[in-house]
Image 1 (cartoon, rainbow, N blue to C red):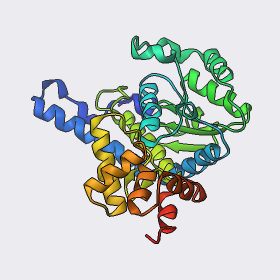
Image 2: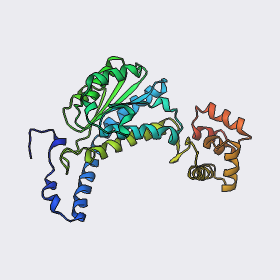
Image 3: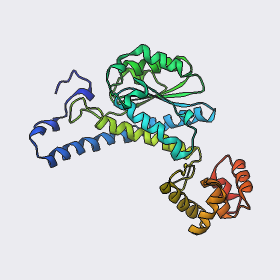
Image 4: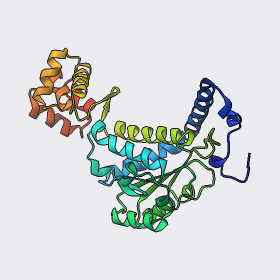
Length: 300
């Protein structure tokens, strides 16, 4: 193993002879690398909790959680940002992305843009990043020029900053308010950080965005009560959620959802005894949108 390389560029000893292995053995070695990478997430839980706290503060003061990334982490970050509005009903403009190469990466995934530090600074300026915002930067190496320069520009603009990287001592980690080191180590395919490093990054972004949803009242007893039910599967799921949360029959839940125009939270309150949609909305408003507190006003 070349010890002078960053750990994410080193070759995992488990890769020795992998090209001569039967498919089942190849898969077993790859899976072992993925499982080992997830262990790095557990070690970083205190820092991940701090990241949730500062991201939540930004959203609570009217700011944005902005994803900043390049390469494979950009694809992971984009998926997280796109899924939040539908899953939790948050406005999409509160979760923008700043990606090396822009949204064109979904059609032409080239590596060159990640080396453009000036573009990182320009894109942060163009996004109007300021003191109300929190910028979450992701880079496996922790030294990607687009990302490190962009995060420095965001911090200079007064934004709160979170960095996720997979190498100890990475410049990106040193330049953030909260530094999340995911020490996933060498990859079974050397340098293929979409593997172990990417798995750990995806897990952490899932955890941060979901913990934010819990904190912001979008989750009730494990149900995503702010989802946008815009297809048949989600409408069925919404009916089950209303029935469960309100201890109502499926028929009563479906009727409450119709009365609430498909919105789960007011539908739960209607099914639980609120007199009508106006009453349900008023109870939610007094509870700052928190369904549990709103249900308490009905004696539930």
